[in-house]
Image 1 (cartoon, rainbow, N blue to C red):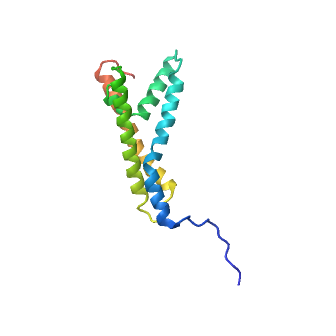
Image 2: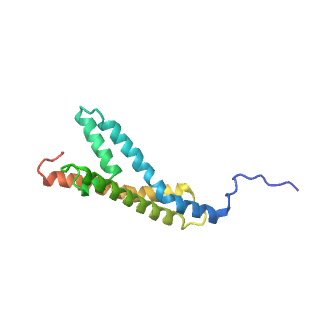
Length: 146
């Protein structure tokens, strides 16, 4: 009798340990897309002399830290607004990461792909709301983008 070859590697520590791993690291993992967007914003805004680069950099910044709009960032300057906006956004992304990890690990055989799928749905809602709020604020202030 021949042994059946393994097509997949066994889960280290078993499925429960892997689910726990996703639940523990899910919240901090949610900060990764935000950090990438913040890095893009810094690159685009550093030495900026173009309207397109400025708009793309600002969009990347508010997608990375959606609470900047709540802190009044386009119209307000100062350290307090930055700290409030960035700090609130960190809390928001950690909360979304926790929710995504909980939703992904409802499945007994959860993987990181499940986590990122759940995260994408939640983050997409935040990003659509952020861009929508920015457009509405721009229209209310009397200088429409379109």
